[in-house]
Image 1 (cartoon, one colour):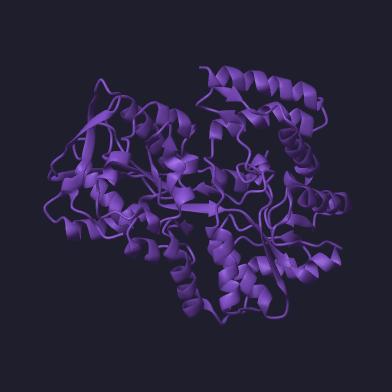
Image 2 (cartoon, helix red, strand yellow):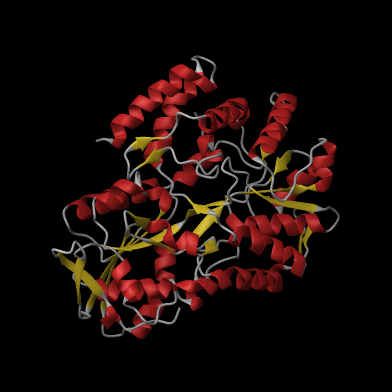
Length: 460
């Protein structure tokens, strides 16, 4: 089945002295880790995976300026959107980490891990808590706490998100009125289900109509954005035997045919193209994932001129505003150059880096983990792009007002939960439940099959 956009989605603070770096050396009778200060070395090894090469190089210049005596060994694997290069990189990382080798600092996108929880349980990554707790210059309060803590598992902090992403619902009041729909700022999952169901019933066979600006995301339409955990890794429990899971599966079954039509999306760039689709009636919602927050901003700004934009958080079944880590940094456990890796990580979290690399077309980061950087990015976008006329689409990108800006900051900053994406888990769910989506088997039969598979998986 052709699934272009699903494949795209799945592609695999002031700087402190490096001398504060700590590393675990053993466990005492008290059960607490003993730590010792690791002296800085003269070397740092980094692998530039295709998906994060630009993000790493944007920080590399700063590192070399601050630490000119450190020899950086930077291994390149190829360019973004090269499946062979990405596969080679992921295989190399997997093999080297499993044998206690590899780069000192690892920067990856969350979707590159088949199962991030298994990676954390393998203890291939250094626990970063002792580093942060003993670094008096580091101010955790500068960051979105819910997102920042997404890498904590069983009491240890295995990675720190550098950025994150969220799904939203963005349309116009006029488009909603045409379809006799209403959307509030805090749209419930049940109300959203009714809107999607009515729209699909009306337009499923109309190839000129789509619910979202893009199709083909399969279960990523709702996961992890609906706020459901399907497995409890710490208690080794399967969590799909409930009404919430059933409601989500029933809703996707309704959407299945429209989401998997053999159709290319009409427009796939930036510059307010989704506003054109919404205005023309060819789609109902932009969801702000492909292209991230800047795509949502440009769609919103493209609607302002003669429409009334409606921006809502994506409705979760748990009634939470759910985010997912995007770019994540970790340090290899046992690395001899952990002090330098920590210094590099601090650059990725610095105000300069966070401000410069977000909220512009082709930005390295989607939503920065530093709280102040999102507002700075929107202000920069307003200054550079606000008022731009896009002749190809016949629209103007109207600058965001203070009220508009506050609306974006409110939705994208107020994160209730930050869920980790799991490729293996989504594959299990898709394979087990697709016969139900197709109408070939009953829900109970498919759910039981999935439950058994997940129970075996969590106990492996």
